[in-house]
Amino acid sequence: MEEELLIAFDSTQQALRAEMLLEYAEIEIDIFPTPKEITAGCAMSIQFYRNTLEEVRVLVSEQNIEIRGIYAKAAHGDGYVEVEEKEGFDE
Image: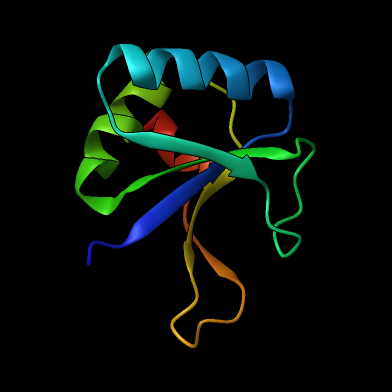
């Protein structure tokens, strides 16, 4: 089973914009409530598969989508760990 990552946002506007752009790019995503373990300003997160991380990263960077970060489930299954911070997209 492929690992799922999620993008958290500080604003609903950015989450909806990201959803539209990711769907347009034909990247498989799911929308669901932001887990309580992740502190974010938006209650909506976008889940995607790790094998599309580079595509997501490029799209977020090129389209200047403001995100809180990209997260994965912690190895022990309790909570989430940050995979990439939003600053990592400015390279």
